[in-house]
Image (cartoon, rainbow, N blue to C red; front, side, top):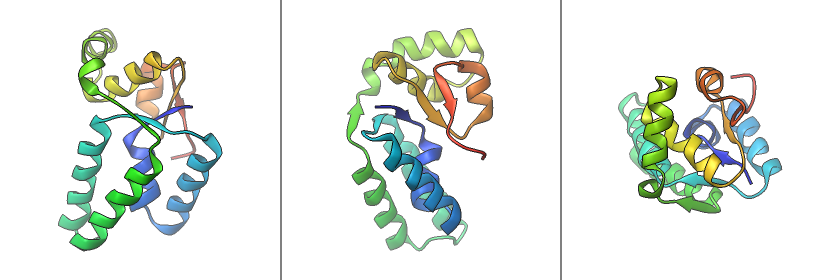
Length: 133
């Protein structure tokens, strides 16, 4: 059961058809999906950006958020991850927001799937590239 980065779920529910289909397919193949609860705030921000840039209307953005929530099987409290996330962020000189996802993967003895190459570079082998994006 991998931990999934916000960008993977964002592509799944907000991406253009071909990217969205690829991300959804990846999620379905990976089985049970785990995220830190921080993901939901980050996805709400992605939804706001989609509305702001006229890519989604507000109702569609709300529906996409609900679709993303339905894809998640396990949500871990960020409060339980923040101390380790800060350690990771300081050591890697990388954002604590991203480090929360790495800490979640560590806590679950699994890996983090992301489309963020920089995150993979900083936190390999825990962080793994989900695809070519």
